[in-house]
Length: 284
Figure 1 (cartoon, rainbow, N blue to C red):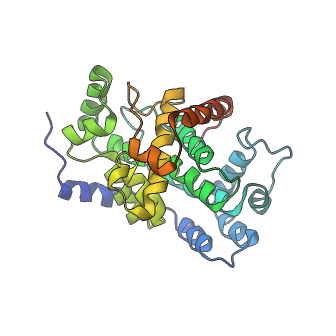
Figure 2: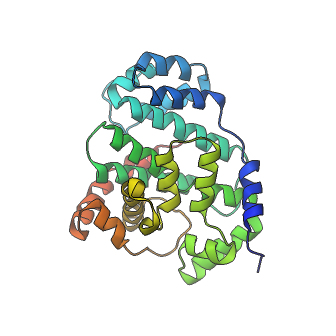
Figure 3: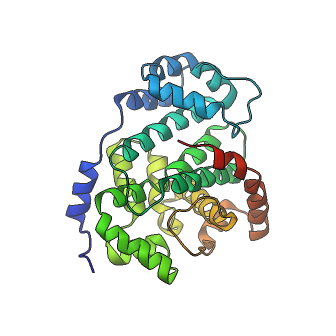
């Protein structure tokens, strides 16, 4: 059994993770400026041709169902919403940064991407309000909620093999196995890396507490609850694979904060099922 990952070692891992491209800090600054326009966003994103190409690829996928080809970032912004395009830019940048840092060892990244997109979709359905700022934030938080798993798989492969092994053999949840074997979870590590990257506090807090809604602050308990329930729903439907071999229980605190009941959550699961094909086809 490996020694627990103490806070000093955890801090070292956080510092070793590559920083996001500088263009993303400009994108986030534009997102915070209420006077920013679609053209402002496009001008910054277009400085990174690879990033803009990937955003347009996603925007033109079956997932969004836009009837015409979207050829510019500004047009994507008009059709999908300002905050949605910001979230797409951030998601693409984060996954490129993390997946470029190593090939991974014990997690299937294609399946983890599907799971994350499923959670993002479910979170958007749970939030409601098409193209709203809150809806876009829920989607982005869903995409990024498990980034800590990728980091642990990259930087602690020997220890993480034990985590995945115990999950598969004993049906333990990943975050529980991480806490027992590593002394730290992907949620805590994802939060710390998010803070280092200067991500919006809402995203950092929803990453941190999506397995422990009861301990989130009142200000951020709703986004944490949405991701908790979205994660539960996605795993019930069976979209992607995040390393767990068993289904989690519904977090009662998350259900209370959301304000719905299990039957309503079942309806969300039915809606999510309708996105399965487009999720399966969409790759980072």
